[in-house]
Length: 102
Image (cartoon, rainbow, N blue to C red; front, side):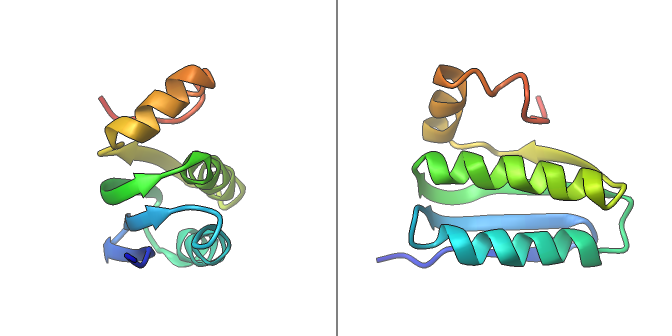
């Protein structure tokens, strides 16, 4: 079993990795929210390139992080969204809600 993590890789760049599911989601939700609040950068990027697998929990996390950034007065963008997450986002019509980088 792979562990999941989120950490500040560079100022304002948060790397999300591992398997995002109901087991890893609550801790990632808490840690990510704290990191977004604590970063000194005016903008945040969530880098999802190292996400191995995700259920809908992964998209829920991204929506929460978007809300956290807005509450902290920061902009947020998401990059490296894996194919499975992009597919779920499309089915749920979230690709227009999530701040995805091209």
